[in-house]
Image (cartoon, rainbow, N blue to C red):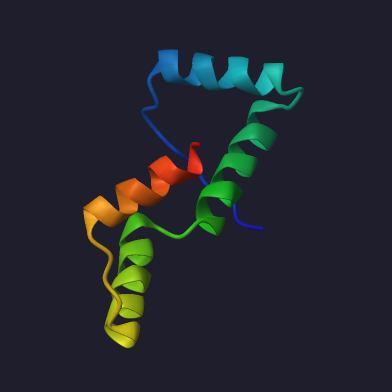
Length: 77
């Protein structure tokens, strides 16, 4: 594994993250590692949008906002 160093983290941020780590029963290192792994496992917003645009291009399918809202409202009943 690779070690990563982050400099100039505000003390208040460090304290908040340490508090969250303690509440999760983890060391700060374990907590931050899990956050980094979780973040890297998710696609970026740009990637999600790229995939969505590719699907629209491939299928030619488009749904307008009114249809989207109507489907959402139908699911709430």
